[in-house]
Image 1 (spheres, rainbow, N blue to C red):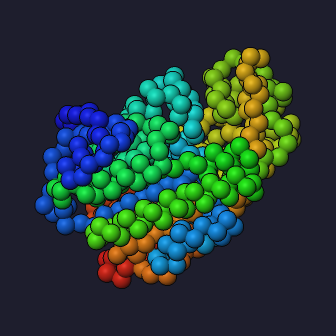
Image 2: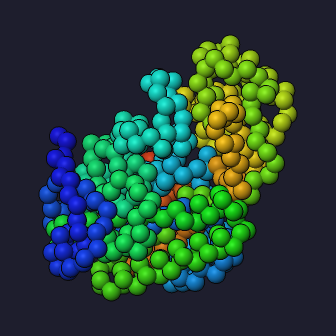
Length: 429
């Protein structure tokens, strides 16, 4: 049975938690009446998972992110980065982090794509699609927690605005990137100051500053350095305030992907073959039949123009991008940090070329790797891990929260070494 959704605007802490006052208005929080945490779940630990969009794995040392580095020194880190799923884009990888599934298995195969069966297009800029749970496969962490009587909250995260697997977070917000960065932390702290029966045990928090700076100015720019400093200070403030609660909270700081400087101009595929008679989204191609797919494949393969082209079933297995019709067929993969599109924009639309970009093959381009840092009562101090696929974050969080997990692509074995001895021993049984 679907939950009854109760929409309310919470003014500061007074209305939300009835234990403090604030004259400042914060963005509307949507509360879903799920009842209290069960008695069993109230005894569990907490996870606050922070995403710093576009925060490349080497930025902490490159730009001196002292607070983030301190988390790694006290807890766990992946010094050489966490490997995003292909394509190394925002929506596919955020959703992979919370489902433990590769994009072709959870269905969000790009930021925007076409579904040949539905004959509809999903776009991260289309609020109707973003909030329609039928687009999303898998069971995200907030839905998993809610199903098992544990309350959850999302201060932004791709998918968190939709009802997925029959559930929503107990508390969530519609995405609005204009919300003040510090007020986001205020809200997280307000949630954690709720009475135990209402307090969410799994919370997400999201910042996009570093990604925006990377796109506009490139990864080696002073603007990225400034954005890194800004979000690092936010993480430092969050960590300090979490410590002051004296609750068993594990803080996990991740990113969805890295960033690379774009080389050259746009590569436009219709220069090599006509693509006018069927849907295209970005560089994704959806010809209507096998004959057209094969014709386009042969034409593009002969072009030798800075990209690889595969029939979908022949995409290299390591990319896990060869079985979902939403991926298109043929599949185009950039050889380097270039921008590829099926068709040029309309004449009345600016032909914008970003300075920095991502989405590339993370196994060929280490600059696509993201950060991973964690600390808390369930994290082994001063532990490190070699580069690992981000599908493995989900089983780590599931273990910390003590939830029953569905079958996923990730494995707890990959990150069991960073868990406290008691949880790590359980993982080996």
